[in-house]
Length: 221
Length: 255
Image (tube, rainbow over all chains, first blue to last red; front, side, top):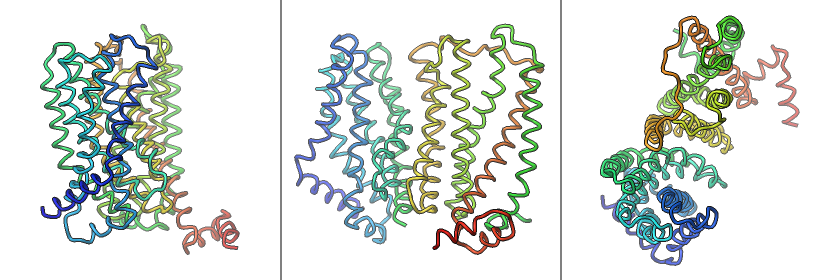
C-alpha cells in the first residue's frame, strides 16, 4: 500500500511539473468535437441528438492518444524493470499508474465535458448524467487501455496497433454510456445504465491490473 | 498415451503430416455432399427463393468464427500457463483461419442481405458483433506480426486472445441490446424453424468446416514450425529425407 501511494504521488508530481502537457488531452478533445458541427452541419436538433455519441467517441480517442504516455517514460528509463524486481505486487503498481494517468488525462475530460455539451446543444438535464457516465466510464477505458499498452510497449510503432487492440474492447462502454445519456433525453430511467457502468468499472478494476501486469511481464521478458 | 509427444516439434511435424491428407479428404467428401444437396437437391425456399442457399456457407462459417476464437483463447491459456510452445503455434495459426471464416460469414451475409433485406449492410446486432469479432481477430494477428521475436509475439497475442474472450460475451450482449434499444429489429430472420430436409446438409457442412479447420490448422502449424526452427537439427534432417529444398535455402541464407 505504501508503494501504491508513493508511486501515485510520484506520477502526479511528475505530471504537475509539466503543466502545459496536462492541457493537451483537453485541446485534443475540443478540436475533435468542434470538427463534428463543421462536418455535419450546424443544425442544433441534429447536434443535440448525436451529442452523446460525439462526446463519448472524442473521449475514447483522447484516452487512446494519451495512453501511450502511461508506461512509456518508465519503460524507456528502466523504472518498469525496477518495479518488477522490487518485490512489490506488480498489479498494485499498475493500478497506481493507471489511477495517476486517469487523474491526469481522464478527470479533466470529465470536467471539460459541459463545455462540449454546450457546443453541441445537449439538453441541460442530461449534463449530470453525461458527467457521471464519463466519470464511471473513462476509468474503464484507462484500465482496459493499460492491458493494450502493456502488450505494445516494446514496439516502436505501437500507437496504431494499440487502437486496433483496444477499440473493439471499448464497444460495451460506448454503448452503455451513450445509452444512459440518450435515456435522459428520451425521459427514460437512466440509473440502470449508470449501474451497469459501475459494474463494468468494478470488474475491470479487479481484473485489468492483473492482465496488464501479465502483459508487461511478457513485453519485458 | 502419446499426447505429451505432440509437444515435441519433430513428432508433431510428422504426426500432423500423416493426419492432414485424411482431414482434407473428410472435408472434401462432406463438403461436396452438403453442397450438392444444398445447392441442387433441396427445394427453393417459398419466401426467399434460391437466395436462401447461401445459408449452407454462411451459418457454418459464422459458427466456426466463434468456435475458433474460443479455441484460440483456450489454447492461448494453455500456452501461457504451462508454457507449451506447440500450443502457442496452434493458437497463432488459428487466428487467420478464424478471421477468414468471419470474413466469409460477413460477406455471404451481406450478399444474402441484398435480395432479402434490400441492402448490403444493416447495423443488425449479429452483423455488428461479427464485425467486432473480425476486429478482435485482426488485433491478435496484428500483435503477433508486430514483434520480431516469435515466442514473445505469440505469448502477447495469446494474452490478448484471452482478454478478448472474456469481453466477447459482454460485447455480444451489449450489441444485441443496443440494437433493440435504438430500433426494433425492423428486419429479422423468419422465426420458423428449418425443415429437416434443408437442415441436414447444413449440419454436414458444419462438420465439414471442422475438418477444414483441423487440416488447415495443422498445415499452417507445420509451416510455422519449419520457419521458426529453420536452423535446428530436426528440420535439416527432414529436408534431407524429404524432397523439400529447405536445407538448400538455409545454406543459401547462411552464406
